[in-house]
Image 1: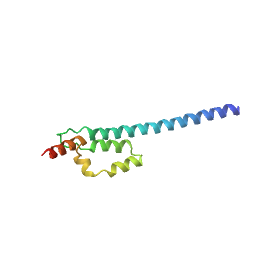
Image 2: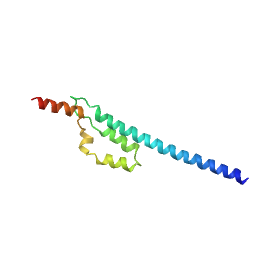
Image 3: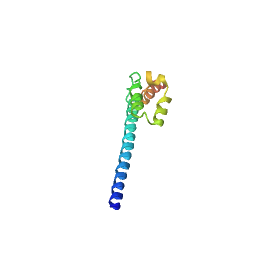
Image 4: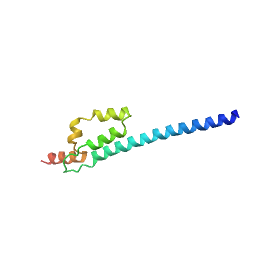
Length: 103
């Protein structure tokens, strides 16, 4: 009887640890998706287009990772002006500097 109870307890602990690991994997995946969305918004601003505000992408990172101190520290470190106004993409800056260089 004791061995059956010990086996049952072992199975319960294995299931509990699997649930915890699955939850952590889900959180990590959610963080990755949010950061990829932010990265995508940084890269997709057109060469001649005005800046794209980062507010939506930053809000997604903050909401999806509210319990992740690292993600919150990173989003807090972003200047408010960049979040509201946006930033120029790397391609846009290259094109602008190339035009200046040609003049």
